[in-house]
Image (cartoon, rainbow, N blue to C red):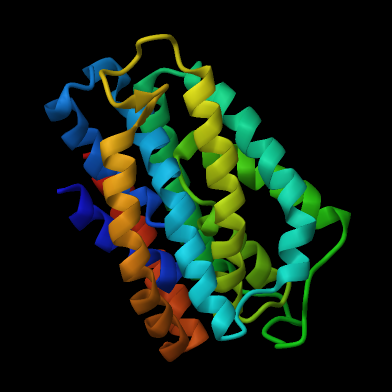
Length: 258
């Protein structure tokens, strides 16, 4: 079952730059108790395992986008310090939160992002291929993105993509750059969930809140599937990509509430 989730995560990572985390969380929340994960720790384990798998998923997606010239590496470099710090601190906050509170945070977050992508629209200077956002504002933005991503268990693409589009980056390059940023968010956040978890929180084959069979199974399959999503992203127009992104967010939000 975990490799099947990895295929879905990989395609979504390449297509939308989101690492598939929001899909994984809902599925893992149902599956992990069947593997011996205590119900009261299932939400935290789903978030942590999703983030751990996203490291390889995002790396595969970023590599595929880079080969097509779709990653703005100067932007990534400016965002990395904030992404790492925010991801680490956000995981500390999440570990202290109740599982039901985390579930509602994920659902509300999905609806907000969907509304922004569907109705917010880019600025007037947007969609110019030569725009490469840099500077300390991007570092600060990275801190906020990393912290929120750790709390809701994602690679940050649902914030990084809208931010870059708003700054004028064409959507397909925003997706590629977001994939690269997701590597650093996932590394810091997963490490935080592993270190901050109470002793003995999960059964064997776990590191803190990270359930290794889920994280590894998902990651290996997602690496193979991510290039397919990348090819789809480069074949879809920018406006269509925004609509796909918005609809996806709504569906995930509803699934979390149900």
